[in-house]
Image (tube, rainbow, N blue to C red; front, side, top):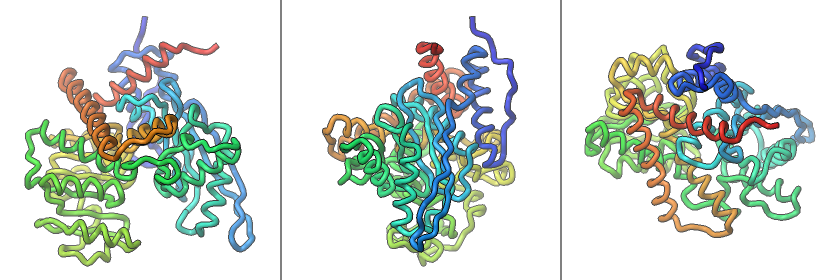
Length: 429
């Protein structure tokens, strides 16, 4: 007979360093709602393993520098581990644990046969040459090699990494095996076994869920105003698709600054500046310069935080005036901030649903590599839209039935699925 968990409950956190505590807090909430047993809850609120490595890399000048990296597995109950690799100077074990846990819930809410993983190297990739970056990638891959494989753990790109890094990882794994193992990673270049549509997938999935949310809340796409915090690949792709659907993108920003124009911004011009390696703050488009904090406070229909964690927090949540906040990044709205938004009647579309497009097309890439049979881009886009709408319909229906928020519904669905898989598999030995 199941009973409610009686262990310690982690309070909501407001700092990036405590992102894992925030994840555990969300698990605690869902576990109480689902009435999980003590034992099952205790398993789900901790990661399965943390693998930490320290490894040397030869710099171009012949000097040797030692770097620290991590690979974390949260749950493998639903399948092999899946999750990104970050190259960032502030990478921590706690942050990587939080990302791994988040991936468990994201793959589960999207009904994908994966568990959750995450990895990181504590490095600023912009300070390395291409050859240094390749040496670092190949050495890190070798250090964590015993965890990796198509049936074990399939990395993907994240902050500071991309298709080229994934190609180096896949090639390193293949060199160790003695044959090409294209299904060992996803997010690769198309020429190396990647999938069409993978780069645009996170933004396309986000746009699909956002349009679904607007329909469900009675808001018209035509003329709806949009502000995008984090005009990277995800934010830019989503902005472009929303504009094509009739929305007016009035503000965007990145780490260099941003722009605001009530009449709508020239997205093509800004895309061109970014593609050429320029800074958004120097785009020279028609509009007024704007800071991140100013963008977050604009009276828009939709606000998309699509950069990093904890952007909307206790310090600025009361200034948010959007009708809908859609999490294009992982964990951009803290629990305390979300409570403030809820009091103001603002709908928050949670990250584990809103940005599930990337891992969904990563799944498609993995399947294509295993079969050595590749799909047309139209089929990828169609299957992605179907998957996103299915997951969104399930979350909205669960939310309405149980009178809970979209985040609570998404977490209850995801954690329930992982819990049932864990229970069915039992405890070994």
